[in-house]
Image (cartoon, rainbow, N blue to C red; front, side, top):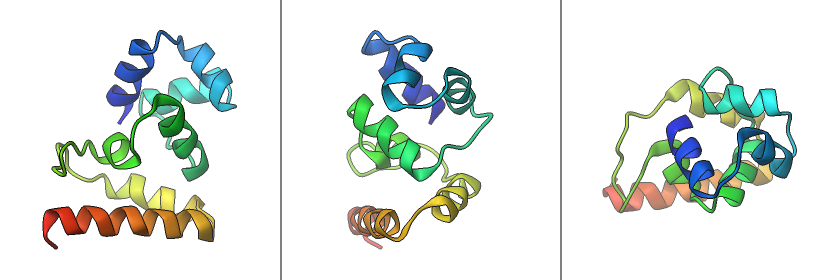
Length: 105
């Protein structure tokens, strides 16, 4: 996830500090997220995806054209679920349903 964030952030010509300001978190927090030392809250992850113009499924799972490029990190997924409110969980369940449909599950 961090590499996808970094690649897209750089393509948009943002420094880590500039991007952290755009999404409303400290530069040190963003750096830790991008370098996989910290897991973002679901709200922060949504802001990151929105400002990078990336889908959540691509950002988190590396999904391109309905295919997963990386093994699902269940610790990350569990942390995101625990930090989410009911509206965010409903949104996430819709995304997971679409992913399951693409995968034929």
